[in-house]
Each structure stands twice: as structure tokens, then as C-alpha cells.
Amino acid sequence: MTFVHQPVMLAEVLAALEPRPGGRYVDLTGGGGGHTRALLERVGPEGRVLALDQDPEAIVHLTDSLGSGYPGLIVRRSNFAQVDEALMSVGWERVDGMVLDLGVSSNQIERSGRGFSFDRDEPLDMRMDPSSPETAMDLVMRLPEGRLADLIYQYGEERGSRRVARAIVWARNRGPIRTSRELAQVVRRALGRPGPRPRMDLATRTFQALRIAVNRELDQLALLLTKAAGLLQPGGRLAAISFHSLEDRLLKQAMIRRPEHFDASGGPGLLALYKKPVTPSAEELAANPRSRSAKLRVGTRVG
Image (tube, rainbow, N blue to C red; front, side, top):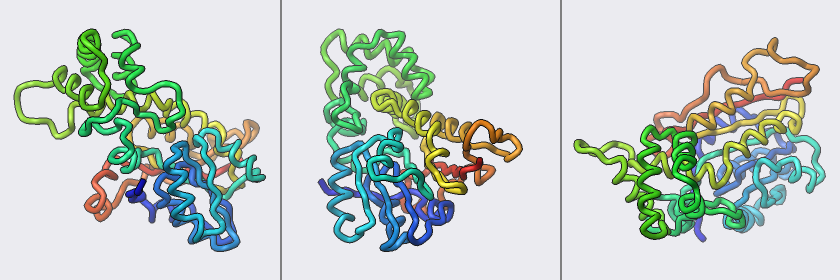
């Protein structure tokens, strides 16, 4: 599969991590390889970059596109929450820096055929790791109405979650909801109102909620953040890009705002490098509109 990938806030990530020649770095979400490639170019022939991804198609792409040109590349199929196990597998205890891009790649939306996009008629799957046990269709078809409404409200911040859940249950009682287009039509009918067409597709928040639930994205991020500081060298940095408020909230909570709030007896922690999150430049927004909701937070290891 041909990958089309445009790394988000690449210059800002490199400025934050300050990758040094000969260093060891981890791209926790290798994806299309944009951040991985930039790190490899800066660590040079003596450095190493470990690229992780849970999507087997991304692993093939990373290996084929970067493996022959960069001897310092190491690729592992793994969820970022298991980075400690991945480091152990290559014999590393700590690294100089890590980058985490929590966005869904253009490839997954447009080419994976897994139903991430409500504009396509694809199987209602949404698994980033195809070996995971439960698909979005499984959730849509089995959850009781109340739990479905709560999920859509909690993960999608959809105010009309109860209307959506009611419509889904009504539709599934008449036959399986098998594709992304079928689900999108159900959601749009539930939320549609007379008047001008809204700027954001009415199915956006419901699809976000189901994707987060299927992939346990917030649970995995929370688990990573309990480990990250301990896997960095003193002064090492984690640069994390989020795309919605739930992710950004977890990152903000994990990064200490002031050194005096850090209790050294509790082990290492992450000190926020910037007071506020960094957002894309006007030039990047013009070139890559999908970056408009991106926020970069950076934490450096203390303790």
C-alpha cells in the first residue's frame, strides 16, 4: 500500500527534542515515517531511532521506505503504551527523546478500508491493530442504548449522544449496521436540523468516539504517561501531538507546570517545557488543513 503522509509540526518537534548526533530516540507512532526520517537524519550514522506502530501496514512501509537508507532504524510492531517492552527487546534502558503523534494518518482514513472515514462505504472496523478483538461494528451492534449514549458523549463530546444512540438502536433492530456510510447516515438523520449546513460533518464526533473506544486510545495514552519519564535520560524530552481535548487534557495533567510542584521522592516526572501548547503555523495550516486541531506539548524529565 502506498502511504501518503505529511508529518505535523515537524520543525517544532525537532526544535523541542533537539536530537543530537549519536543519540537514541523513539518515534512512538511511526506511521508514515515523517518524524522517524527527520530524527534519523539528525542522529547520523552513529545514532539509533526505534519506530513503533501497531498497524502492520505501517510496519511494512517503515521497513521498505527507510530501512535500506538508514542503518540506524529499528522497527517494532507495538502499541506505544508498551514502549518499555519494546526498549527491552533492543537492549535499551533509557532514551534521549520520544515523539508521539496521536493523529489518525491520512493513509488510515483514505486507504486502509477500515471505516475510519464517514465519507466512504467501508466495513465498520476502525481498528488500528487489525488483530484486536472488537470492531466498531461489534460495539454498535452489542452495546445497550444507555452505554452507547454515554460512550458517544464521553469520547466524542457529542451533546446529541442520546438521540444518536436511540437512532442506532432503532436502525440495528432492522438489520446490521455494517459500513461506515450506513452509520454516518444514521447519525446525520438523528442530528439533522433545518437551516444552513454545519461546517463540521454531523457524524464526526460519533466516529471519533467509536474509534477511541475500539482502540482504547485514552487508556493507552494514560498508561504511556505513567512510564514515559522513567524511560527518558535525565533531561530527555517527550514531544506529544494531540488532536482533541481529551488527549490534550491527559498530556497537560501529566506535565508539571513548576519545578517546585515536583516531589523528588516520588520518582521521575515530566516538567512542561512550554507554558501553553504549541499550535501549527499559518503556513502549515495552509499546506495541511488537517493539522488545524493539533497541539504540541513537551515534557522534560526531572528527578
